[in-house]
Length: 219
Image 1 (cartoon, helix red, strand yellow):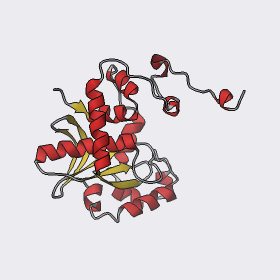
Image 2 (cartoon, rainbow, N blue to C red):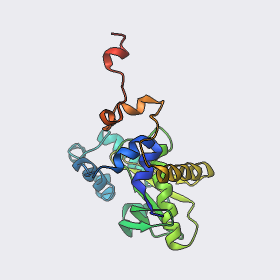
Image 3 (cartoon, helix red, strand yellow):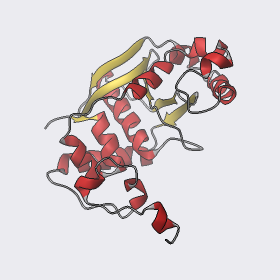
Image 4 (cartoon, helix red, strand yellow):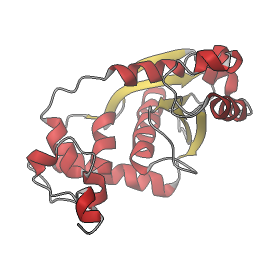
């Protein structure tokens, strides 16, 4: 049975139908994504950078807030590994999934850290992104033949780093995404939660009708 890419598991966890359409496409990584991922490997310099320099970088928050968020991240006991990872952007092959782990922290056991270029929720991690982080931990665990119960998730455009525990619920969500991805042989039913459809690049193919601003205002 073929191994499911981390990125596909993340997409399927967000919307199975989007996962189906994306599977048909050759996805190019936007320049903005590349630029924001680069921030995750420059923490030392960015902590000391003046506001004028930070203002020219692709941040999602003002420089003062970015710096304050990153200062909080320095309190993690794994900070030295996060700011200067021993291994970066490595393809990891697990039993059921495979993909690029952005940082592998040289701990015992090793810990994966996944970099996302959007904004985090107020607390925790977006569910679909936690699926990708769990997938990375599962694959790394398989490769090293030892259990891994934590991962890190980074939002470098905001200077936010969060530690993720591989809870029973998160593992169950990952397994559900894995089953869904393996079963994709045609477009799944549309989501009932249409709020996810507004920004989706597959709206036309999907045929979903999203609400316009005029309709939301009662026009």
